Length: 391
Ligand code: PLP
Image 1 (cartoon, rainbow, N blue to C red):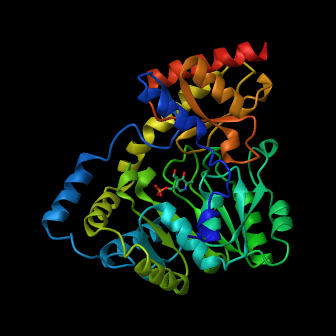
Image 2 (image 1 turned 180 degrees about the vertical axis):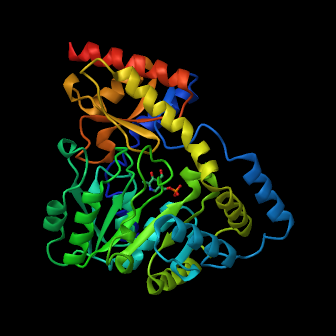
């Protein structure tokens, strides 16, 4: 039987960038020890108190069909959080509960793009972005945020890519994979360009609680942007709830009403007991979120300290997230060749920058998701390989 172009085209026949990760897992399955600095998953599991709340919710009967758009209580809780943290008045009608930020990426592009539309996204990018855009039948158009500009996108590049008739721009700050948070100036340039070119702005803010200095800047709070911005939030990173699949989209009421229809016709909503647990988790406040983020902040500082005093491996000091990006161009190797050699020789798995697009070529993304001692050992081995290759 003939499959649709839309589904066979999701990966566009190319690599999805996970080669090193899969090879590392195969090595582990074959009994070898590997230090995994690949995927963005905490080294702690979901907190016991959240699991207790989830369990209590199952016993209290939250096991039937739930509302497609999210329970009134959770939508209210998210609206309050967003209003308090961003200063933008947000009501439950501006909120859709989704099964994770990834579902939010899909729903927002469904809302913003018709089949064939051009959908811009910033490169380096989170691995699923092009596939998500292709999933809704739109055409992904990367806009490079260059290493020379510390991975801050340039509004002029976005404007040039938008040309006439692009439908949307997807950004992510704090950014996976670079760890960079976009500056006020960058955000204002992005906002201006979206207004000039009539673009929807899709703002992936799933790392908003992992910021190491300053305040998180959401473009939805900039003048004239609330009506054209769709924000994606998630409890995956902020509350170590990756497996619970819970997040949200915030945006203009009309867009959210239609995305509610999408939810009814696809997922039929998120499990009621997960939504109850999410309400409980959000009630724990910023102190809890700081505790979840603390190991990544500590390990970020540790990596920067370990890399001090040499020139071969140059870190991009992260403003946030659970990653550090390393520039290894001085070794003469590509990110892919370096990551492959590091895995083969020292059994340390890191993501090659090339997995995240063209702009991150010659870089590595190190996930700060193992204990400090293992991270220190991995960095020692990485530095040894880099020194050897750089001659
Ligand atoms: N957006 C970015 C930038 C991510 O890094 C991830 C996951 O790593 C997601 C979205 C998806 O997160 P979720 O678990 O909420 O679907």
